[in-house]
Length: 295
Image (cartoon, rainbow, N blue to C red; front, side, top):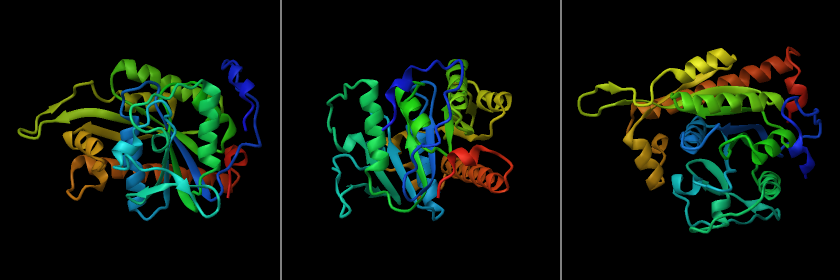
């Protein structure tokens, strides 16, 4: 378990290196999906590009670490499912759309609120990482709660993350918080694999006219300013909302669409970033792998 006294470390200076960061047995790459603020569609993005990765043949796990607002069960059509024990004695994840899924929503069902302090949230996230029978995974996607609080620090400081992906929308208020998220991960020495601009624009399905409701291009500009990869933009599309409400992610729907292709391209670029980072580590070009590498 992590030393929870570390949560009080000032973020003016990076916390000390923790060579004992946990690896999840069988998981090659653990990727945190984060946002500086709520309401930017972080969970929607996490679910859809996780499905997109699985569609390439990769073995993918999805951990819903948003303890206070777990939306992954609804978005994947797994509401009402309950976690059970695996033959190994660990927790067996729920499987759907090629994903192995774990969420507090499978334990605390209905409208009951989770009213926990930070340390309890951190322990729950760690238990889901270490006490679940994930099996062999190419990617374990962790849908984080919004912000830069205890849950993010616990994961960043105690788990062997391959990196983090930041989700934002184009307007300045969201970008301001996204920049804080990038800085937080850098201060705890977790590489930022890229930034995604969600709700980038709206294309009218009737006339095709494009409207930039929340402005446009801010995500790409922020990525360039902070020197992180820009993984792509996702438009506002009613199919995303309908898919999330009905438990059928847009990437899993039969019909092709621009938004489906957008998520697939994001997944491809993310896989490229991870492969490139891993290749650099194997050549000895960076020291990040010595901290975050796991088999």
